[in-house]
Length: 477
Ligand code: AMP
Ligand code: ZN
Image (cartoon, rainbow, N blue to C red):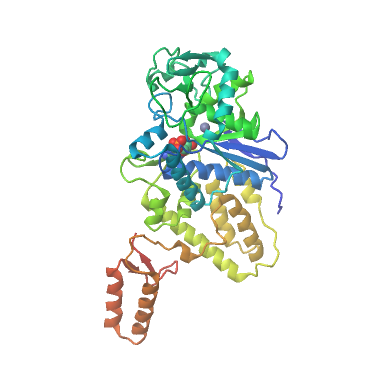
């Protein structure tokens, strides 16, 4: 039994496609940069999986004793409708469609994203870096690499991907393999070359534009992450995260810029880590097709958002995870069982009693590339482990929950009730009706008791006599 996590932390590095021991650049510190949302629309729950993963990584680094500095950026300029180099700026497009200013669009969706961050109990990073705050720094960065690595076309300044060593090795794609993924831009030397600066076409005015040596315009999307990660975390820093799609274009382009700017082969981060996708049975998750799966939709249907966090933690971050409402329901039930177990334990012990946490199981599982699903089964085993005193078990659960972020010590079963937004009956009325039903039953007045039950059923309430989890009722989702 020990408090100090002693095992080496092994993480999967996409650069080498292998598990490597985490050794920080600065002893005792961990500096992490996560590619954040493009704030032209609400994030879907797949996007939020990327931040649950980054948060779990951050919590793990804190558990391992590192002083964590986490940065998440907010992209409010430059991300085109195609990840590579074609289409319109996503924010310009959304602003035109909604006839609003880009700044209002960005503020609205940034706040909505922050609501989701809070709902999923994702810890606040040390910095939210906003791309538009860094445009002068991006221009300086571009100036520094322009002569040796870029060429100018009518549309802007382009990065020549053949001027750096091993372009695209993160994606394991050669420079020509990108041919099909990109709308050809006239004059581009290689298909994978990408815009560092996009000039405003003559005669047009963009809502967002800045003066630069290459004319009025806006930065290319990839530039912001190179600039902000170095400004806030130094060069190199420890870990760069993002969804698996970023392994193919965005991160190889960041790496190419970093190599050019540092005049070296350094990618900029020691580890590049990628979470796999959340998918729907029908395929890729999208913001436009079918039901728009947002955290708020889960809440409106009555699910506590931490059930979704648990759903993410049940899978390994590198595995694809399929979303289904049944799966979410099962995760909610699992969370209820955990909370019930903790409530029982709390009743058995005085929280002021001291106890040593047992962290070796946790250390072993989480140090193995964040094996949260094993941490969860370990947690379930510890809840009922008789040889560990209740006080020690509580302390252990606190430690585990610092890593999982499920709020197991503060949630109550009542918080986890299904609470659909469209329910026509209040909890107070349900409780009062059930009390009357109980009285009727005690008086053997079964016709009244049945009538009251029918009343509840008509209002969408399922009466759950003898439920093993101890629920008296639930609202239909
Ligand atoms: P975006 O706002 O499109 O730049 O995406 C924000 C983050 O979500 C990025 O790290 C993406 O790689 C990630 N991402 C996008 N779709 C999914 C998905 N279906 N599952 C998991 N992560 C995703
Ligand atoms: Zn990025």
